[in-house]
Image (cartoon, rainbow, N blue to C red; front, side, top):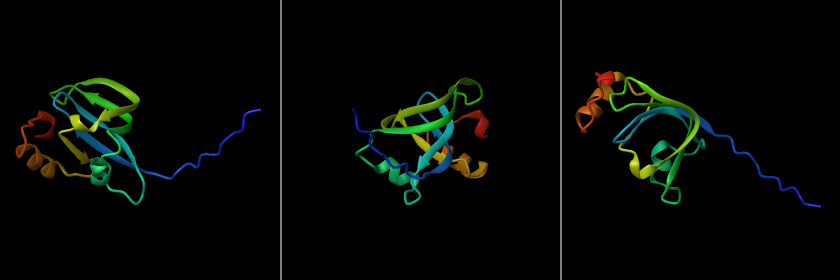
Length: 107
């Protein structure tokens, strides 16, 4: 008879984010431990992938949804910018101007 192991479920905060890669704009939720920030998760070198839930993937223009997924893991090396959705449009415009991005939906 197999023994069932108990694995405790950790409470995590859902953080709505916009993630930019060289090819896509991804909108979804990242689940963070309450003691971690998004930057802590990105800087954690023991994890190469960032899990994202409730995902909408947009084309490079940022206007047309390519697909919707319940779950996605994205290689952190492919992320060019990550913004909490609480970032204002003006702040996002400034970020985009300081990078090579020019999504028309952010203008």
